[in-house]
Length: 132
Image: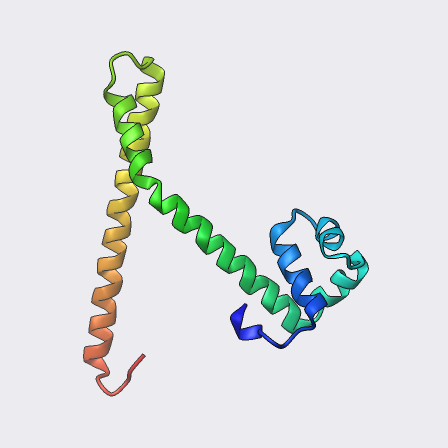
């Protein structure tokens, strides 16, 4: 939202913050003491909606980063459950299935990445004057 700094009134900036931190437009309206119909009207304005979307993307990116930080602990938990003889068999099977599924997906992603890299390299070699 930094690209939009100074583009909106203080009330609109407050509404953007409220929209990003509340569950509904109505809750956001109460939080920033602005009528909901006003916020709905602002959301129809391209610049305001673009700022709102940018804020949502940023918040989502933060959530994904947090999940990625926890992926090592999640993998460790799955492996412990899978290997622990005291864990119920159905849970061990489900953990094993999850480990195998995620490992297969990782291999597929690596293969796709390698293929895309090879295609990009081939495209550059066939058209050296063109830069992406």
